[in-house]
Length: 480
Ligand SMILES: Nc1ncnc2c1ncn2[C@@H]1O[C@H](COP(=O)(O)OP(=O)(O)O)[C@@H](O)[C@H]1O
Ligand SMILES: [Mg+2]
Image (cartoon, rainbow, N blue to C red; front, side, top):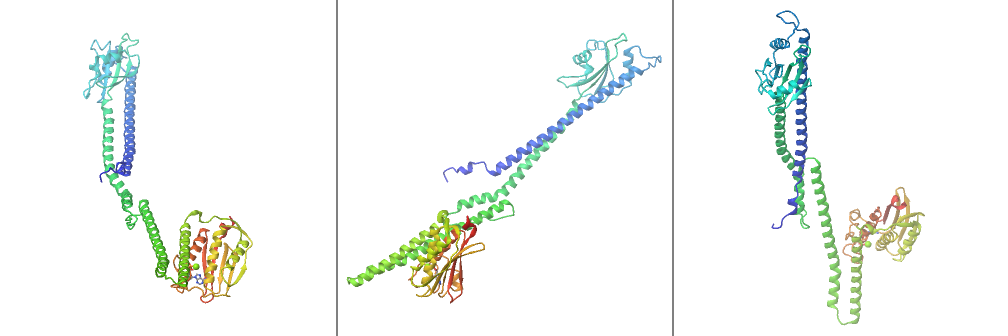
């Protein structure tokens, strides 16, 4: 193939399913990771706040109750108070406890209790930060530094003691705790990445498997031609995709049958028409000069042409029967219609015609088509009876609809024939070979007209005691 196939360029359903799956999963996993991270970080924050408050309270208690061991009295020198307090404290790894006295930034006269485990630049050695904390009017705060934030709380002790610039400071470095949260976040992201990768693989495979019948339907449909409708899609499993394959196969069955029926129809029609053509040809070829012979030939030829035109008309009618406008119902007085049919039928031959019964009701049907069907039935009755034999025509109502019937007193129909005579071009065993009557299309037309009205044709016959053909039309249809 040299031309580009536009179908190929479309994004396949498989890819679309996979992309949507991945998108949804990525969003969900990302949301979980981010939410976990923010919960953990908030936790760290809460813990640090708690620690700050705890240390500050401890110091405040000491200020209130602390006794100088050298003289057993309350502290008078805040530096001494700080020194003693700090000596007794043990700081956590991320914690610094400081006593700040008189501008610690310029005079390194601050005291540091413990900071051995600090992994980052301590507040005690960061003068700028120290000054910021020391001079802050707030009791707690955060110093933002490029090396890492510091959370702090401050208790001033100098006021009223003559040493106004003395303060206890607890500083906590949250970086390590925050890093833990971040590493959990990173781990979650990594797990999500792996999950997405696995989803990609499994999703691609599963979507491919599930959609395989769809591809099969496509390739099968592409391979179908009018000549070869035999291909079918193998049905696997029981899901809706399998149902699709089944539906598609069923559609192919119907198509195949329809095409076969059409071919058969054309074959039958051709065959039926060939016979009169051959007869006409033969007679014309052999026609001599004798006027009597000529007259006879013309008569035969005219007869055959009539026959042909009847067949063609019938075929056209049958072809039309599948169209929705085949019957155009209108309100009809059934009694009048029955009487009309009776009058028309009577002209068909010298029989003992009887108008058996007629329902007096207004119903909806196509009077032309129904008359056509009834005349067809009457014609058959004439063909299967002898002059003087009884043929009855009538209509009656029944529970679920109405009936129109033609009952004759001829030989009836054998059970074997009864099965086939409604098919087109099918004639009864007795009639085969005789060319006097039609091509076997009459009852097919009657049936098409009944079906077109939503009804059916029934045959009630007892061999040797006549046949009764009944048009059964539904009342719903009739009373509409
Ligand atoms: N009233 C009847 N009595 C007996 N046989 C009948 C009657 N009507 C139809 N048939 C049988 O049904 C066959 C099909 O009828 P139809 O479709 O009208 O075709 P055709 O009249 O051309 O033979 C006839 O060949 C005949 O064998
Ligand atoms: Mg007939």
